[in-house]
Length: 409
Image 1 (cartoon, rainbow, N blue to C red):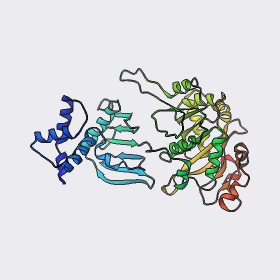
Image 2 (image 1 turned 90 degrees about the vertical axis):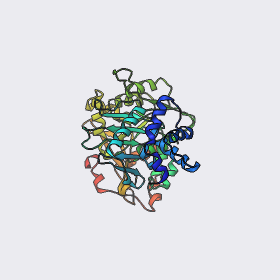
Image 3 (image 1 turned 180 degrees about the horizontal axis):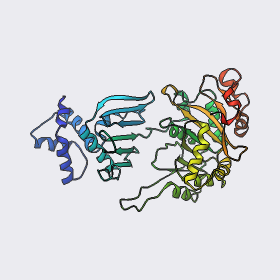
Image 4 (image 1 turned 180 degrees about the vertical axis):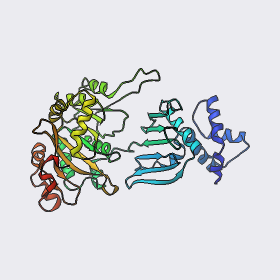
């Protein structure tokens, strides 16, 4: 064990006791005072390193701090002490381990830092930490091993569409189509699984919005990074320990309509607030958008129906609202572990009056495949008829599984 690492052992608790008696920053003077009380002295370079490590353990993420690379999106601690990291190369196990006692202490401290309670009486907690990190913790016995910690990290900077294109996330004609989507002020939803890059892509698209427009963003925890001069963020608030004071997404969507928005953005649709969003998009607020968890683009109607039911909308009412409020689905996947746009679809009402998604463009393979919804998408977004040919050097093929329409999957 190196001298700085050895010095950290046992000093963290002493620094915490010192903070309790004299609140303030964890700096060199405080750590030096704690070391001297134990009869230990370090050189200048070692003292700086020890101070940084103690600060991580007292006020930061402790042993997880060193895993926060520039491209890391998630850090996950499992009950057996293993730690996994999600980055552009996919989810992989790190070399760092954490013992059960330290994992529990870290989970409880992070929950407290986010203003939430985590103990035997309340063994689950969801909180937003300083700096925008989203924390979720679970303690035994709900976890059959040690404490479980899930951290979702905010992007260090707002990525542009050009950045995503350079990273291979926007194949073929996707960049031109997405730019046209924003310019045409079509209402859209970005869909995909967890960690597929929905929030990142939505932020990049909103950064293309005209500078004269006012964007109002509603989220549970602020994650969207938008490079735009006029963005207003609204964030929900949990109820306090007595169950009062909570402000949910439904209330925030309603409030946003009184704030003169040009575009209403719901960071993630996952409950009854979808009803308010659809109503907002049906009252003249063009270009509204959000994200939604879905396995495929063609599963989106079923997801919307399930969420609409939570808001008191039956299938037919949801279809009537959504068919006129939402127009385009941009679906993301992680083929080969890399985040990318894999499909674009349009929403419409079927012959039975229900909502359905019709594939317009499949981008899973090297050559884009136009679906039955392509013509409608091209007309709505004012796309150049030759956009597909220009993207691949030849005419786009029509994929057989799309030829039958939206019910193929």
